[in-house]
Image (tube, rainbow over all chains, first blue to last red; front, side, top):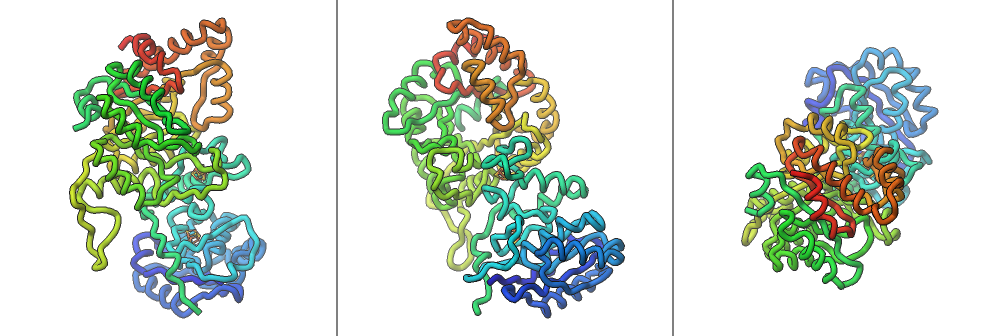
Length: 211
Length: 298
Ligand code: SF4
Ligand code: SF4
């Protein structure tokens, strides 16, 4: 089981572009998504002057094939927006970030933090991973998660161990920090890296709701 | 102020060396080499910290012993094996022994070493470890009291804080950005990964000039053509040009050390105007360090 918690609006303020397309994942039954709070958070963003070009509910956003189809379905709204805000678990947000280029290469932002809850950890077997760290930085890392996918879980950039673009630990595994760097650079958003908290808070993962 | 800091601030071209602690407690050979070949030839000696994740004695004990011998140590510190409590605590331990120079390194992953089943820690990384040092120097630490206030240290350490960079990595921009972060976090000097290509080094130096931090170019002594080829294949961010490999492979066996010394000396000579010093990593060939410095014609 995993839980998402809506990010406080202050954390998103200053980070988001002027117009957004919003996707809520209603998920699989294994994930708790606080939909009411998510909707309230979108209202607050409107209050800050951010234009919402569309707001859609989806489920199983973590499934790449579903998500690709849906994004194409939402293409009209997405094409008007400068970014996509996703309320889903970390894997769901990463899947949107991967598939969004099929419609328009715009940044994807995490609307919530995925936190740990004992028990079943989601449904979709995928290459993408989320270790439910509780302080989701996907919005700052081009939708690619270094916490779960960098072999050292680094949050401050590449370690210098990469060779031919592959991670120090395996020639089969891409260096996620080079992926993040190149993707942010393509989007003209390298400055985002300065906003990452350089020290991880290992308590965040535990702030989940107990059922 | 440490001798290393003094030397760099005086604007002198500063040379540092390196020893590696043993796997076991037989520290004397490493100390003897430092005594015989490094003392008075160089400003300070790095002591590696569980390098490439191969279990061995750590950095602190050898640093203490070097200091007692009147040789200035630079304590390397990697983030792979200790969490932020242990790292801060060991910084205090080092400071109690009067060790000032500390080199902050993220560290190779566990899988590069000989304890593949160990847990990789990486609670901090090279950037946040520098931040931890700055906090300690300000009389507090990374934690908080029960009331949420900063903790207060009883006795405040002082460090000369260093970091590393790979100036010839295949993608240089992420390295430059990370170096910027390290300097912003408090790094006061930089030692680089091995450089064999002065042109690439110059290009990197131009990219980070604005940081105004002293940089010591890394010189790893090429002990033979085989080692050079191995490095090209296996060491990230290091490219040994073919012409150096040819020089080594065409030399008669007994001349290889002489060629190795010449190459290292020439590299330092070629790059001495681009940076503030050189960090020589002799990988056991400490006895040639005096010759290398001679060959560098500083
Ligand atoms: S940053 Fe944390 S919450 Fe976000 S995808 Fe990565 S592990 Fe999951
Ligand atoms: S090579 Fe890249 S992915 Fe691998 S540990 Fe280093 S920064 Fe992380």
